[in-house]
Image (tube, helix red, strand yellow):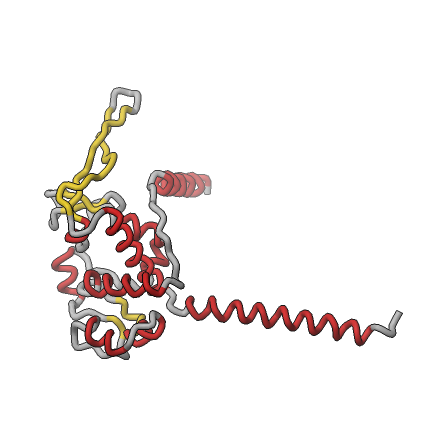
Length: 244
């Protein structure tokens, strides 16, 4: 039992150290910002949907939630033989995905709920040039990533800036200190940050589309409960007014 407890302490302490050393930038998630969600849907369909499915969300549901006309969705977002009432699937099968990328690209329906919006936001900004990798890029948030930098044409190509850390015992470790642009993309840094935020906003919406309606209904339910409390209070006073 003592060995098990020690092993668990070591395991969880390692997880804590790993988590605390990872700095994540904050995504500005606002599911009430329909324009941001619409832009994010555009980026998702154009840059993500060729490899990553979101099969739990129907195109028609997305159109309704984000106030996008159905004909516009059919004309600009359906690039395969998918139907408007179907989920956002892809034509690439699992075997081909594993062959080309080393692992089958995951469905992104719940990725924001499993990884977190801040993690996604930081991840999409943290690709850098690494000729040793199959696609020529690596990622500071996800080392040895198997995914190409699909947004590279927007952000440009970044290169790492290294620094040496002296641990005091004569051992010096070289680590990545920062990333700087080696080849500009079609967007400025601020424009790319905004585009990534829109994309993360949409992927966060993917994780729970009903949250938009749930939030609206929640306020109505609370208002109804408050009204009932007021009514019941005056009823109580009326029923008990003659009892001392």
